[in-house]
Length: 310
Length: 270
Image (cartoon, rainbow over all chains, first blue to last red; front, top):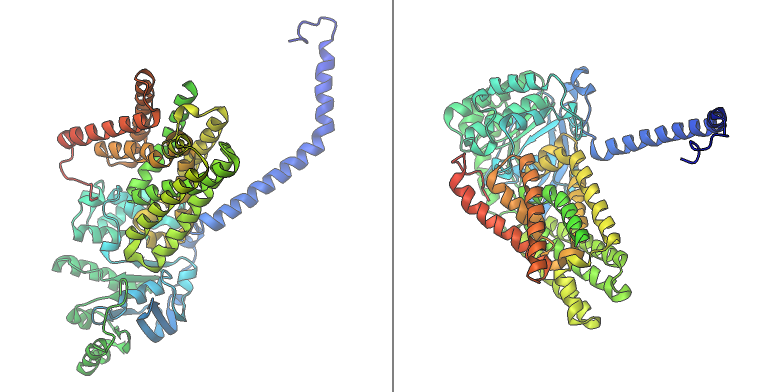
């Protein structure tokens, strides 16, 4: 205000001053801009590392590395407090294999799956799984471990499967709507895509979760009793996905209860009763002898069930 | 009075999303525990520095987070008993805090710590509240997706590599921060009220997330305005008046929405 009311002061000198100041501070401003953008980059990198490590769009168009999709375990044990959920498991889920994990209640099947998925830390031994480290492992827990009351629509739930293309914070990619639509059509849920998940029947919800698995496109797929309380036709439909995944070169491990179904559809079987009873080709693993041994192993003196989710 | 109103509005803005997320995650109990866990630290701050904003805030935040960490550890070792251990934390924190305040302060101090005084919020406290509120909204806006997924399918989030415990920790920290912000105005006993009641009322009307958050914020503001006016004209304590206002809105929503609910199928599941 003082300037404009001062007629003596020539206008030029003011702009000269500005130019002078600009010239004088140019190197400073430049270096500031550089260091600021460097700071921005490193902040972005830190954010990605801690909060968004699942963002990896290159994974979807890169060449398939499914050959590395196997899981090897060595002397694996899981313990809750004093009780072993299972112990002494050594072996391999070969790449592109379809394995059923079967055993009496409390045999440690779910705990094994959780350990393979990296959720439960083993008490001894180790899991070697390249897919887990690359976030190319999918794990479907038993349905009651998911919160069905959560306000999310079927389409939104399925879209989450494409996580690696948007991660924690980015907007969804353009092709997402199309792939969600396709996955929903594949599992037969197009009619309910805008419903809340709470409104679905158990079978429909499981179909939605399978659609999410389709989008997830994982190399290793772990399923915990995926057919529990489903009707026959839904089970048959979903079983076909398991076989399709195996034929695509993915490694599929499924906890099951139905012996007949295992014999009919699963090439390999792990019979677990707190410790491995048999692991290999289904017809050999499920011999009457082995099944009897599995039953017997569960009625040992300390026959109480392991703490949680055994 | 004006400062109090602005403070309440700022709190409502942050409490909308936080309260909604707390309800969606079914963690209202942990929120309640946290609000009491703030007490011993704030009381210690009071003991050493009197009514110093920094001391009260820092102390409260520290014990709040400490108890949250302890609760998480207990939950890991014995998952089935989470409820009872949370209640134990809540009672112990509360008693501990009351003892500390009673040891040094007067009855009035105790009332202040327990129920807060909205009208005592000064400009300094307002700046703190506004900062926490802004930080909360920014964080929720940025990290909403992982917050949401972590709460209904944590195993999925872990598998796709979105991180797991990090988001839980950030969320709990946000809750603790907001409780500390509310502490001045509403005290440890009521701080959780303006957080949960508007969100609970909003959930009666809609189940979609963003509408719930918006509605919760509006309800929070309305309750604050009504509560402040009533407390001013009827000469009543303002914190309880505001929480009561939110409670009345919740009750009305529960009755009215139950009748007029468009979707007959209940999605509550709680």
